[in-house]
Length: 214
Image 1 (tube, rainbow, N blue to C red):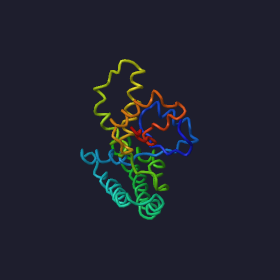
Image 2: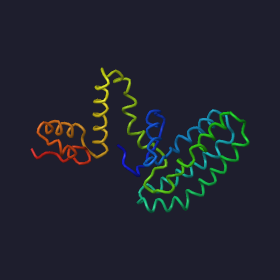
Image 3: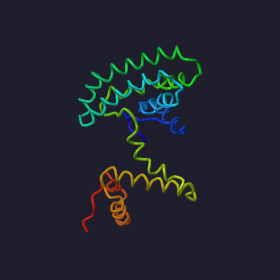
Image 4: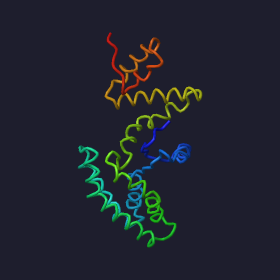
């Protein structure tokens, strides 16, 4: 269950997309600037577009601003984004709109431009909320170890086993994100589970957990 007013970075898992689209009361969509930029970088590096570098440079300016804002509180981050990032985003939007009409229809450059324009509201939503990231790179970096190893556990034996494996992976990553030693955390939780009250199970979640006094 996703709480109301949740901001969510959306990607390409089709089933989840359908679920997100059916819950518009909470689904405030965000899109990843890194993905939009990657479309243009691939064009530029392959030599298929001589104009993509112009948009890439503007996106680079946006990232340079974000680098300077990392240590600031959300309110101040939002203010500076409105002052510095929004004018660049406005220029980028105009650039995309103008060049969409100039490039060949159905070509690689037109498709890359269309990708950003179709998602523009979601790409620019981070400007209005200092808590939101410009992209999803942090999350992708967190799940990369699991993605790299997925072939090793491709066959879990059954659907239930796969679900259990996903639960364990989620707990391990959550423990890491909360500064815990995953082994020490899981060892303590497994030892306490048999006598722990079910009504107080949330005490054993990584963000609430306190080691037992033994």
